Length: 307
Image (cartoon, rainbow, N blue to C red):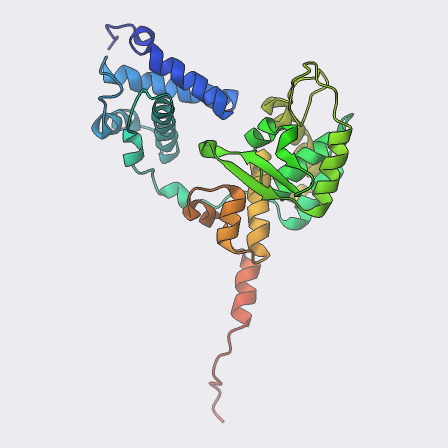
């Protein structure tokens, strides 16, 4: 049924606030486009009701209207978009509560094990990084592989966020929260060298740690392209990885898995990853068949053979 009101006029201020908020939060272009589409559909369902007056029932009704033919992943994505929308409105003092936060996400996806590289394969990735700006690109991979940074966090990283004296980086992550991460000594040395050889930005006040050949902040798209090209070369020499769908975020999965396999306390892993809840970190506590086999060999059964 066609609507009888101008959506962008009725909800001009909330829409503008959300667009600005997503840009400040460092969302990828794809996420911004997808979330805005979901939110526009939600606003249309409100039928001119002020967003401040909408409640849990309105959000649930919208989710139900989209549910037919859609899976849990789609529902959770839509819910995440609406949650982010209300978070933006609260930040800009256009709303006082987030009704979408009162709705639980589908639990089915929590049982899905993340894709990751084993530690030996993770170490190999550096050997397949190539190109004119190899040292810069290696630093990007090391931050994702051995610090667990998201691609958006790499994108937002400034020179001032790297503290050589303390051996840490300040990461502006999800939920618009800062997280200080201590760096391995080798990575401190590597980042120091990369910073020294950093390309001169085209703008004097550009603070980006990673700069493109045009002198601008290296974009998320460029970081993802560097990763995809590296993974293609890695798979060409390692056929056992061909079935893995490798992305930048899979390096973060690999980092978390490596820590837990090395017996690092899950609460520490949670803090390093910047998770709000330890339940999110729990998805990395997967075990493989070999680990299960080794565990069973430690069990001492009673002697059941009759003497």
